[in-house]
Amino acid sequence: MIDIVIIEDLPIVMEGIKLQLNKVEEFNVIGEFNNGKEFIDNLDSIDPDIVLTDIDMPVMNGIEMTLLALSSNPDLKIIALTMFSDRKFYYKMVTAGAKGFVLKQSSVNTLRKAIEEVYNGDSYFSQEILRTVIVEMQGIEEEIIKEKKELLKLSDRETHIIQLICQGLSNKEIAEKLFVSLRTVESTKSRLMQKTNQKNNAGLIIWAIKNKIVSI
Image (cartoon, rainbow, N blue to C red; front, side, top):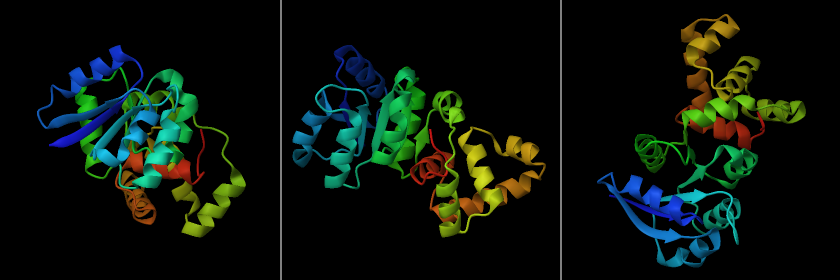
């Protein structure tokens, strides 16, 4: 059983999320809060496996809540429930420590996959967000990239592949763009996962944003 807390300020949205979660037998909603402060005030008395939180809320938003919650309990696994209009907050939510991003209008299957993957230690981006937000990353900070490359001994090819992953390209598309074999891309990605201690593309994207290899 996966114990879940929902933080959402709009009652109709809260009810919709609960309706979706109740369709999954192994999900158990153990708490509902209207804003981040309510959750923080009750953090000592509740022990969720997953926290589903809105980002833009009154009193205390999801960014502030995530920072405070993880400072008290670094093991919390937080998934942001977002709207397309929340894109200005995505970078701050990543750096605050969110492990997943799911659009509020996503299907129950998408929400279930996000919860299960984050619960199992991975990161998750819904495909819609990869297509509409991550693809728009820009403003690469060359000096910061250079420092990170030297620190982790990232090659130019590894850095380029990270950037292409953050643009939502598949392994095949990356291979075609770089004029290399699919096997070369796969082996390079494997090295990247080892160097950055990540398990999947979503984790690598979050790592790249946090370390300013790319920015949004």
